[in-house]
Length: 257
Ligand code: 13P
Image (cartoon, rainbow, N blue to C red; front, top):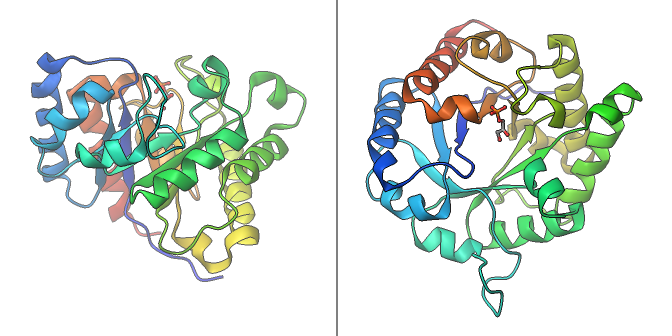
């Protein structure tokens, strides 16, 4: 199997944080993206910050955290991928566990959103991850593989830009993360699932780890096999800490493999 060298990808997920007064922090992060040019740096922002950020940044990529599966229509309070694209977003996070659990989104819904997003020309970051109960029952890998297959559109083409983010639900915001061997096993299983579905295209898809990532553990996480980048929640709100994560990614990309 040919191994494809991938640029590290570091994505901050600001969740429901940030006001217009946060723009200086976004600019700080943009400067980190300029400084560590070997890393693709992105911010998934609340809707209200997408356009102000997109017209301000020069190096980081701005994206959304969710969108509707329809392009437009009578869906009060929703936003479509086309609208995200129109206001400057270039990617969207889909299937985050906070939406799967908190908003009742199942994998069929996530799959429909994936298709619509990709049709609108946005890149998609598909989030998958197991619960503590699934891991304790020895079902972590199979449940993530099932979730991945059920969330991926059937008709992906090489023109569709997707990234997979593995985020164990129990690791999000908890300070606990899986053992390196567990992350390596999960990312290997995700890669194999993608190969079975997509063939050679699977080699170009970046796999991110997310869940309690911060400046103190980023370097170690990035040294794990098949970890091509990181999805960072809380630590991305502090530009100094997020910059350190980006710097770790730049350093990791310079290590001989
Ligand atoms: P934390 O980094 O705060 O654990 O959040 C992870 C996450 O949910 C990113 O999408």
